[in-house]
Length: 125
Image (tube, rainbow, N blue to C red; front, side):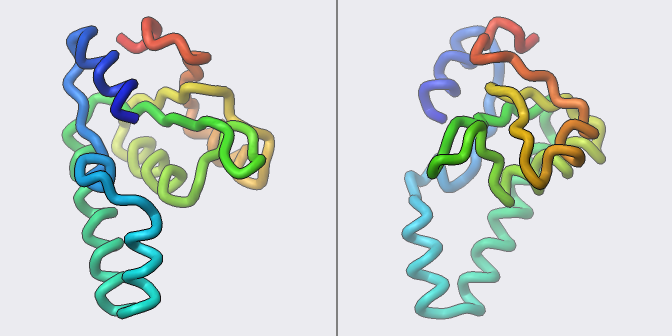
């Protein structure tokens, strides 16, 4: 994500990143929090969702980095799906780095009319 951030900033875009990327937190942090204290975990994750959707609300568009993950082609996980839905209902343009996979979320995802840039950042204007 940070590599793409730098490339887009070099092209004059202002980028708002997820807080976990800014802080360098991995999924392991939230998993360990969940195991220790479920109430603290839900407060933490809920706060992150609210923070990131507020950033989307202040943005013109989102870029989904849907790379292959865990053997799934062009993976879009639950958090990203939520972010895309929020962007869609608030009228933001949605870009994806790769095409949408034909999985169980396919119909909903294509209904959000994302623009696939096929790894070409020049298409983001």
